[in-house]
Length: 229
Ligand code: CA
Image (cartoon, rainbow, N blue to C red; front, side, top):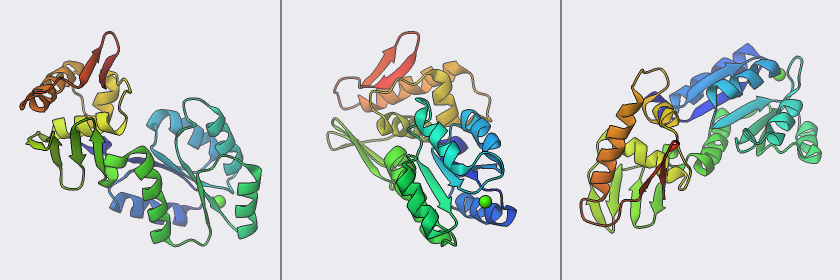
């Protein structure tokens, strides 16, 4: 169930700062991947597919700015929000000036609470259900805070797996998810589950969503997977 939680990639070479941040991110319920260098960060981005990246400016080897620039020019990674950590306010000015594409920046020494708030702000954009937002799609509403789902104002009862499936679909309507991607997101990549299990739960979700009538909002994309709408 872990990977329906947001994944944060934390790139910071100073061990003490890295551990404090990792501890706080985990306390927020996020999965945390840690990198000490830019090269390690680039490798982990592909492996973890993080929802948010916290990136220190000053790193040994490839700098944070360079990492940011590379990630923001690549099609597959440009949508991942990056929060830059900078040592001084002049550097913060340079982050803005250089137009690296960083989505936000925080000046060291920062308040951990403030940084956690910034992470949440970015997640609200890319993974709204994961931070308890209320989602709407057509006549379906999903309240991630109270775990209530309704269609045309009639409550829909869902099991935990179907709820996570629907959250995933509703965060990105129209996006086609492969069975493997849904397994990663909904079940967690550490758990072995057969891809046919996805079909079973999508079937249950469809049935639940149509219990009061209405058309099936989930689309089967042949050879690709599933999408909402
Ligand atoms: Ca550093």
